[in-house]
Image (cartoon, rainbow, N blue to C red; front, side, top):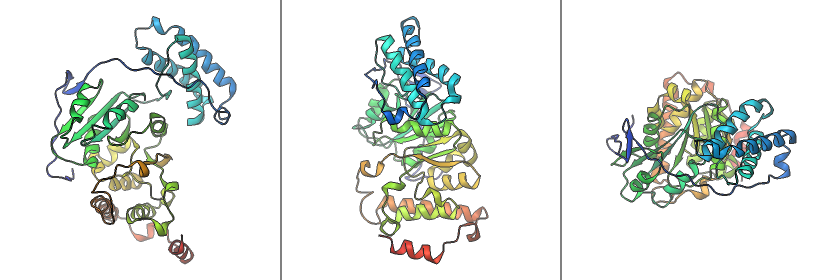
Length: 371
């Protein structure tokens, strides 16, 4: 594995309860009110009869909530999972599935007399999240709160070089797999480590310094669960024209163009959130995740399905540090170097200029003069 900040060592901290060195704690889950109405535009994506059926099914399930040994949250999820499997043929898109899920949860909450603060996302395969953090005590707790609203079988937190209260916060959280590295390893190496700590079929990657609502994370899980291998954060509409882009955005776009995926624009595995399939990780190997552009390049070269299904604005919400601001900053240099390594790997696997789509003189002029 490529080391970013000295030797990278893995260590699991001992928690209140451990199973095979995984830190696990059990606690109560919070329940808050969920919205009971959907917008007309959203409802139009799903047949009204399907929504009515889902609502009534939710009511039936909600009446049995107190009879079940599961927590109300677990029972609501499993009940929706069963119904979704039965009506999946009528739910042909993420929007349709979510609207039906919301209708079910509304009926469930009404009948059970309890409100639910969970995302009605039905997944066909086990999913986990990997969170990388270093000194993020101000945001890490809320990041975990949002992840627990999703139907995840595991949440892996990779703490590296932490000197604040982040470790204590994680140990106090129920149901967390903790990977503790005393030295600074960096987020990219942390994701590679985290990917090895779970056997889930779908992995969602987020950072501990950025609180993203669960509603915005769900589309990435859904995309991979339904067949994508790489689900990137689609930042295309947030970027300026090519002539005014920074060097990092340009080299991201250049790599995608070299790989005959100009449709991806500047979208890259360097940005979170994103989700990966177990198949992708097995093919490119977890170590490749330490160099995100290289992992993306390998996925494309192996013919895996790479998409950018949803957008989370991490540009404006990105935490500003001395290492990621200003022209030619440390982070920018690292990312550019990673992309050069990805291009070198592509060339080493037989890539050549003839594989890339040629650019016409007119397009060169357009990009040069874009404002």
